Amino acid sequence: MSAVYINSAACISVQDTLNENFIQNLTPENSVQIVKAIEPNYKEFIPPAMSRRMSKTVKMSSVASKYALKEAGIENPDAIIVGTGMGCSQDSEKFLKNVIDNNEEFLTPTYFIQSTHNTVAGQIALALQCHAYNFTYVNTSSSLEFSMLDAKLQINDGEADNVLVGSTDEQTDRTMELYKLNKTIKKEENLPVDYLNSTTEGVIWGEGSSFFVLGKEKTKSSYAQLKDIKINNRLEQDEIQNFIEDFLTKNNLIFEEIDAVILGFSGDSKSDVYYTKAMDLFPNSALLYYKHLSGEFNTASGFSTFMACHILKNQQIPEVMMINDVKKDGIKTVLLYNHLGGSDHSLVLLERA
Image (cartoon, rainbow, N blue to C red; front, side):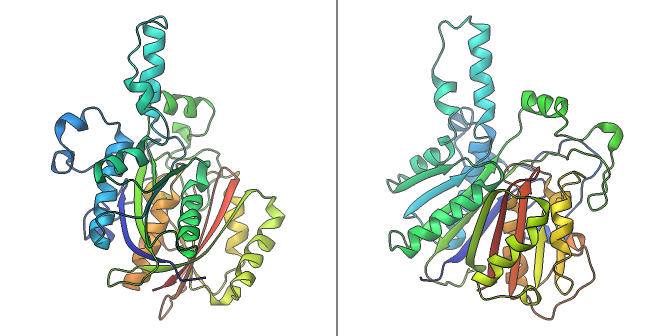
């Protein structure tokens, strides 16, 4: 199989990740229930008449995808693949509110048309006039991983040379209310949260959009080589070691050869146990976490992939992400491990390009 490279990475998140110097300004957030993305000035990228009709996730994705394509020097990709957990939930809520307010009569179809999960990939394709393979994955917290796996297969099978891969999720008022009711989001009295030693359930919820160009050729802008991906919907806590060990064995690696491990500690005491067990397997690796910077959401792993790309390219780990004191002379391999509430476990192996 041919190598697959990540040739660009762009991210809109709770941090100012569109700014070139964002690594110096990473600010943890542990004292509010919901953190919102820092959005760009959309007028610079999208005509105002179009922008008014777009939901937040479509706007974030449009801008992030433009940044990713520009950095990779690609005008029209051979495929567009997007992963999302909640899709265009703002327009879904507007449509349902319309149904109720109008007694199920005289409904305009706009909100319904724009509420489908594949709206994001469709809008990007429309803007680019791209008629290539266009696909959306909706697999909760492993949506991005499935998208990257598809892109890797497309490139390995010779179906595509450059693939635009993205992940995106937005917040909506009603969904956040429901998440507070079912205790997905932390209670106010349990804030601020200690992400690594939390004793309470629930998370701080975030949002964001991350886009990457995957290609078969290494370029000047290459961040990393995407070596492998593994996904498992359900795992018992005592299966974690075998899950990770089997993955590394398949890639001819042992635990000691992983330079950095990025874990998705979310502050939810019930499900973070998986990360604690995984952490014990890597005493000689730099251990990192990131959801204190991005918040938890369905496609939060897009933020960790973005950070991993910069760590591999710059050979520098931001101190704000470090769990232990292990320092490496060079960072060649990074392992990313993520899940959401104990479901949809994913491993992504990246190597320095």
